Length: 56
Image (cartoon, rainbow, N blue to C red; front, side):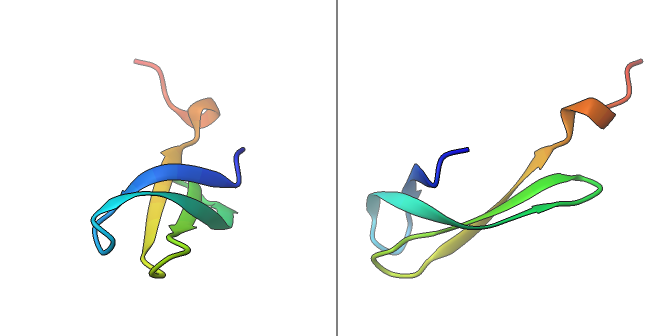
C-alpha cells in the first residue's frame, strides 16, 4: 500500500499528498488514517475485508 494518497484537503482547499499515519485491521475491514502534512487535517477510511464478505 502506498504511503501517500492524493486527496482534497478541506482546510487547505486544494489537493494534497496525504501521508498514511496508521493502519489497523478490524472486524469491519482495514482502518487507515491519513494526515495532510501542511495543516494536520486527518481523515479515516475503512476498507471492507473482501475475504470475509458473505455471498448471497
